[in-house]
Amino acid sequence: MPRFKDDLPHGVIPATLLALNDDCSIDEAGTRAHLRDVARTRGLSAITVNGHASEVHACTFEEQERILDVTMEEVGDRLPVISGVWADGSHQAAKLARMAERHGAAAILVFPSQVFSMGGQLRPEMAIAHFSTIADATDLPIIVFAYPERSTLSYPLDTIVKMAEAIPSIRAIKDWCNDPMLHERQIRTLQSLSRPVNVLTTHSAWLMHSLTMGAAGLLSGSGSVIPDLQAALFQAIQTNDLRRARAINDRIYPLAQAFYAAPALDMHNRMKECLVMLGRMERAVVRPPLVRITDAERDRLREALRQAGIGPEGALDLAA
Image 1 (cartoon, rainbow, N blue to C red):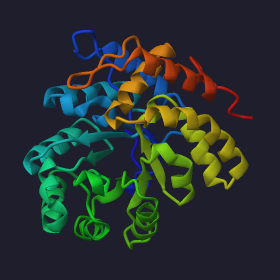
Image 2 (image 1 turned 135 degrees about the horizontal axis):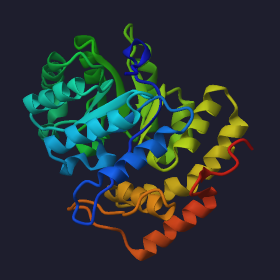
Image 3 (image 1 turned 90 degrees about the horizontal axis):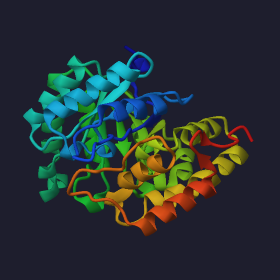
Image 4 (image 1 turned 45 degrees about the horizontal axis):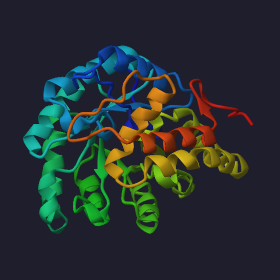
């Protein structure tokens, strides 16, 4: 099974969606087809499952286990697979981490515990204890999901540095700080540690700007729809081809504006609708409390796809 070089997650990493039947059960055939479709994109470094994009909040432990198995069967021989760890209790998170390692994941993406929302920023020892419990359960590299400060689930940069120093298996963060100054500071600080911690941006609403700051990669739900554009943009930034990067970003812009409009909780809902429009998914069913978007918003998504030059076969004229 593929692994990351030096256990450092990097590069272009789409977070895939979860296909559902009309009764909200998992559409396994549809999910398999989606995984294959995304994974055939050239330039990817890994695939993420059991994250926000695949509605992990509404999936049981057994469903998450099955989703990971299906992913390993479909793409696990070609790409490293990252599995999300969504749990409020440290021992529950450790159980998910052990499961991910047992089933072949190459890394885990650890979401913050909701317990931290009541002042966790003031108790850095809690974050260190939480991640230490997870790290004791697995040898997999850990990606810390870093939330924005306004969410009250964030880790201050000083805390992330302390966590990285105390827990060697922390090798990357998924940076969602949503603050350009802090984002650049985190890139410069974490990627320069004696044991580097890579910054994987998830600022997909301003992806080009983020990548030019030096992020080592991106981990993005919109990669479920535009993995080819994201891979092309990352490659253009890596080769300092600003003209090409701007042209690709012009394609991404209308969809970024549509995906990440308020309310943010509909972002992956919108992505499912786009996959249906593109003939890449049969249904745009989501699990409650999420509900489908309106016809008017679907019209806006169709227009965004048109402006981006994206059809059923993907983005057009990437070589231009």
